[in-house]
Image 1: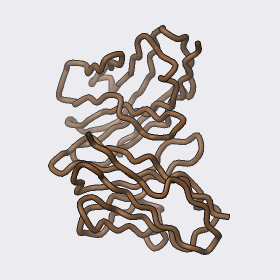
Image 2: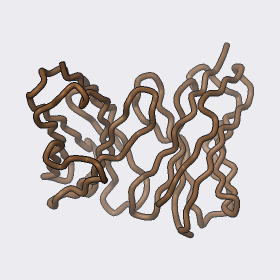
Image 3: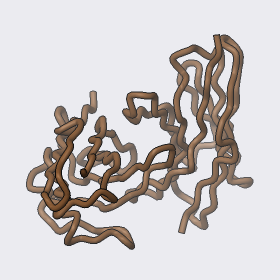
Image 4: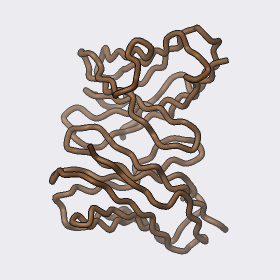
Length: 113
Length: 116
């Protein structure tokens, strides 16, 4: 069974600064996908970024980027130029190809003005 | 786009009654839909996987007779909480995967259920 661990229950960052959220996972699979989802106070789950394990290049989406270390089974999310609207719960998730998502426990991020 | 809707967004019911929650993919076809449950300040826990035209697959510990799932079309899955009790109060979220896609799930906005 796969497990996903987010070791930071809460984090805060000043507006316009950079923050990194940690995620580690455990799997014996070689082909899989990793995701970061954002859940703002509205509770709508929003896909932030996805990474395919067979791709060595780290995924980037505007201010969001990941540091994917496959050997270390680490998948951290970096948010640059943090904005107030980034305040939310962030969930790291793992998925084997064609299978279900396994979520981490979440990190609550507060962006301070 | 890939929009998933849920109805109702919130519901309050009396103990012992049944409640149906709908999950619709509005602009794409979804062969697979998933139902999650989320307690306050906790992560999402998968309840069941719903495939169009076949029986749902339930996760360990989830009572299939209590949480009835129907996936009758490529755009609609329903979750019925039967004989609801206060401990069933929770936030229920569905997600859907596109036909011919193997990865990204798109989530509905969730349904808050309160059982009195």
